[in-house]
Image (cartoon, helix red, strand yellow):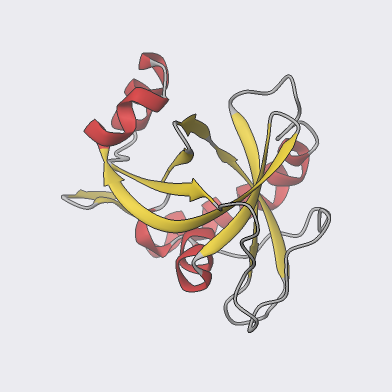
Length: 162
């Protein structure tokens, strides 16, 4: 693992280990993520930019004003990030409620800090996460571009490979 100015860069073996671990851990995490009593982990639903499939990814999510902030784990190469960036929107489930989010913007530590408790920020810094994704809630009546059908009900435990 290398830490660059833009965040964490993983080598090929590390990426393979992360993918393997995610296939085991993510389905279990999805059982509790996004629940009303779970303020730390939400579920991000996104459409695969290549496959068109809908994926559910458990992810650290925190509200910040009319937006939500999530650490950009595994840098700009994470599949969930690339899919959301390509689509320009996603749906998250956080504390038992679904939110449609638009306008993905990468922000730095100082802009994300108010959304997270200090202990989480320290953990993120220790593992080299320096960038976060902020997305604002879609206004009432907003609908996604016609090239992508809306993300409906939870897609189960499907995971896109990073």
